Amino acid sequence: MKLKNFAKSLLTAFAGGLIAVTVFYFIDKSNNMNAVNLSQQDDNAKLTNYSTSAVIGTSSIDLTYAAQKTVQAVVHVRIKEKQMAEYYQNPLYNFFYGYSPQHNRPQPIIASGSGVIISNDGYIITNNHVVKNADEIEITLNDKRTYTAKLIGTDPYTDIALIKIDEKSLPFITYGNSDELKLGEWVLAVGNPFNLMSTVTAGIVSAKARNINILNKKYAIESFIQTDAAVNPGNSGGALVNTKGELVGINTAIESRTGSYSGYSFAIPVSIAKKVVEDLRKYGEVQRAFIGVSINDINSQFAKDNVIDKIEGVYINGINKDGAAEKAGMQQGDVILKVADITVNKVAELQEQISKYRPGDKINFTIKRSNKIKIVLVTLRNKQGDTKIVNKDEAVSVLGAKFEAISSSEAKYLRINHGVKIVDLKDGKLKNIGIKKGFIITKINRETVETADDVKNIISNITGGVYIEGIYPNGMSAYYAFGM
Image 1 (cartoon, rainbow, N blue to C red):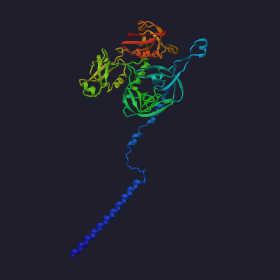
Image 2: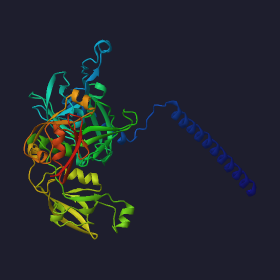
Image 3: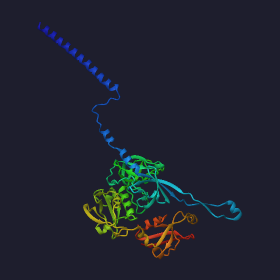
Image 4: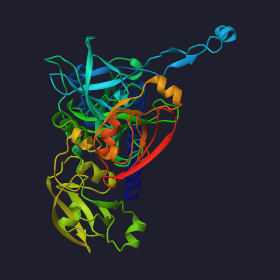
């Protein structure tokens, strides 16, 4: 009896458990089906705890503020340049009467670029290559007012030019700090590509201190800000601004195989442009400082060959006699790590920092010698080796000559494309070496001479030998050399 009751209880318990398992199975299956159906029924459904940090990070970059703040202060620069005249003969006149007088058909060249207003009284920065050959410069503001601009000065070694219009209360862009730009930081390029007024493009800082060898001059300073903001022909001289609407660079060049934008653009840092503009306004000539060294970038192989413990800084492989570096106690083999408080790891970075100073300025250099750190106080000097401020007129006064560009008819007759004629000759270097009045200078130290300013710019940056190439009005070529 007991065994029968036990079996009955066991069977009842088994049956109850089976029922419970079955019910649980169907309930769980129903819940799972509901969950799947919920996820499929609405593609727009969003989880309430979805992180919005990425969205917040994007929306915090307000490019509209910088665009609106700066577009009014970027101008359209239109230049007119006299083209060399074309000569033609009248064939009927030649047939009956012999060769006819030559006639010319002047064809002015018209080009354009951009500029940045930097003061409310009309000073404007642009590129030297935009205005260097201009006979007339026309400025159009964003509100369509037009003005004739005066050329204040140019610097072919940084590709910066300063022009001015006669107006007051103009919108202008304030200077930022290009040294503080970081890779990946957002910037705007503001200019007039393809004559499209007031165009704004955006990108990031792709690299700094780029030397692309575009200026092709001995003392050129290239330390470009590289960005991926779209820049095209006509953008030259326009503004590169940060998200605060501050000027951090002057758009100058593009890397392109087609002549149009293909991914990278280059701007002159405002740290360079600002100093050049201040010098042109105050002195009429850029006061270029030198430390008197020859330098090299450092890579892994160079570090190994020269027993340098770390790949950093800029290597000094030569010291100029009586230069600023020698007088400060620098030595060949030293590695420059900092200029003032700015770290330098490329030749271009070092040149950029030096370009911010004038002869006579005293700057602390952090150097490494025999793997030990030293601080050296350097008094910067000019190209002549002293600390004097150089006036543009004084720089060429030793030549004793007055220059003017040759006419198109002279160029055609002599079969030359450029040159400046000596129209007045007094006591000085040129007269002493036998140059005569009327001589046309085409090159100085192998640099092309097209204007009287070219003579001044080249001569003011030369110490040592000067080699002049040119031609006389009778077609005789001549070459002269002298020491400064």
